[in-house]
Image 1 (cartoon, rainbow, N blue to C red):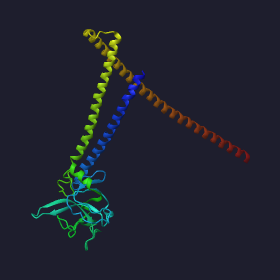
Image 2 (image 1 turned 90 degrees about the vertical axis):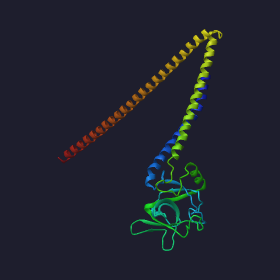
Image 3 (image 1 turned 120 degrees about the vertical axis):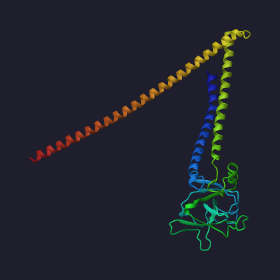
Image 4 (image 1 turned 180 degrees about the horizontal axis):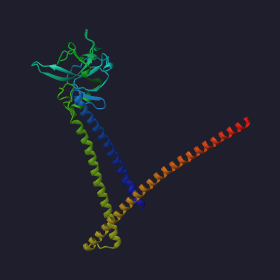
Length: 333
């Protein structure tokens, strides 16, 4: 009995670890699924930029923000950096903020293409960084930080757009994030057409597939391990039973006959154990139901008792009031 108890306690430890791992991976899958659903829903409404829990993650391709401006909340940053963008109230934006927006460019052949751009809100001459105009919309003017960019004169030319094309404000910049985004989604750029958009549609299904495979692997490994442990235990029990019965190991017929009988008993014992556990579970359910019914009846009885007490107090007060009224009338007479 002591050995069985020790064996059960030993088996509990890996099982608890398995449950914890499965639970963590399950929560991770649920979280990633919620992220993927939000991305799929928000992408068409956000100029092709997916958003999850209010945040978007983009990779900046050009060097337009690689300058030497560092007095603002978000300093200049290099091409390839990852940016974290969050949706904000347009009225909260001010000069110096870095924003991501949708812009339509006209190409030399006259065709138009939409791009996702990330620049800094800046005043330039008569143009204000942030200004609410007569049409009721906030209008913005942006400039790149790089005055000597190889890909354009971002400090001499600016971009104008209104709040309808605002994707969000950049709240964080990270080069490691940019490297990560390039690995998991090479086209997750901050400079993409609206039709294609920052393409991260395949990323989260892949991330979900990984923990699912982890759960399956852990489950399979534990199943195989438990089966081997059970088989080893049964073989040891069989060997002990053969010795106890004095079965000659050199007599294969006797060994086979005893083995079949032994495992039949084991299966029958296991079946009885399961039925006993099932009966206990059913008994616990019945007992819990009876307790629940008893609690409901007790609450009803207590409520009825309290109601009877209240009525008795009211009756006593009424009788006292009537007695006082009679006494008052007798004194008057």
